[in-house]
Length: 169
Image (cartoon, rainbow, N blue to C red; front, side, top):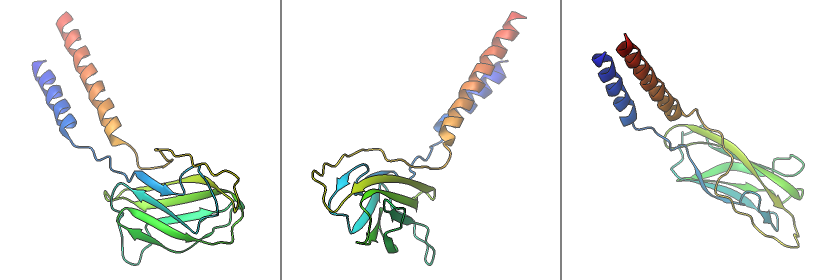
């Protein structure tokens, strides 16, 4: 029984000492900002992430597309990647209203991150009041750190139950 508890303790300490990578390219700034009202309609859009974006020659692994309120893609040309920033040029021929920015990047840890956000744009907003937010929507890979923590708790509980059961006999 003692061996089982020592083994569980060693396994728990081993799992807890493993560094879990959580750098999945978090957005630190964007233009236009999510939910902001901008006037006039911008001629460029960019997103800056907290780490360097991966590049592969000849392959478009980082993308940014901007759609106007009618669903037409108004971004054109290849995206420009500079460190942790991705940017694109926008056509001046866009319908005013809600614009959607879709992005997909490969962060420095090699994990793809994709998501989208919206902003409002018009040639003439009476009052342009930007609303900033620190968290933008994104989809990334599965969180194995949370799963490992749950596994450690379950293993510990099983060890305690086994010990109690053997003490009662």
